[in-house]
Image (tube, rainbow, N blue to C red; front, side):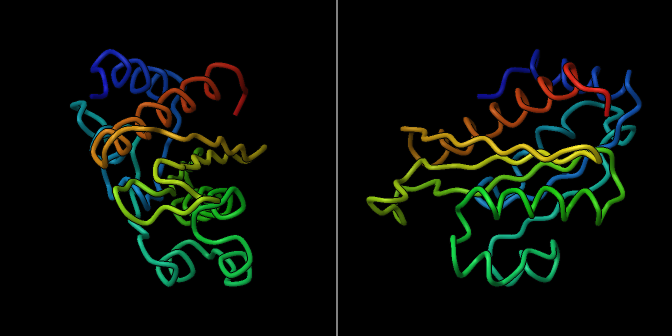
Amino acid sequence: MVSSDLIESVADLLTSKKLSIATAESCTGGLLGHVLTSISGSSVYYDRGIISYTNQAKQDLLNVPVDLLQKYGAVSEPVAEKMAEGVRRNASSDIGVSTTGIAGPTGGTKEKPVGLVYIGLSTKRKTVVKRFVFDGDRLENKDSTCVEALRLIQEEVEDQEL
């Protein structure tokens, strides 16, 4: 479960730096947006969320190129990167965050096991993507993804001039 202290810390950081954020979610299905908006007054920093579960949604709503999806698959670093950049541009927000992965319990392969997740974060200056392999059940993997996304937001906002 995502700790309320972590959520409040990220909310305070975004609010104090006057930064806006938008989310593009696949494997978390809107959970990250839910977590980010669980704080009263979150409309100060949270602009919007896009749940782009299918490849078509990633293309239509986030401008993820079809060739990237065909070459690397939806669960990949390049797609997480384009999702984060796409939602940031779409929302004209300071930060775009993306999640794409295999929550499980089905859908995994040897190359892309259940629990494999990519989290992207895009600002006007740069885009970073982190890879994780979680070993929980479906809900635990989604929750772990949200925790790591919040940590990435916290790390990037604290360390960078956006």
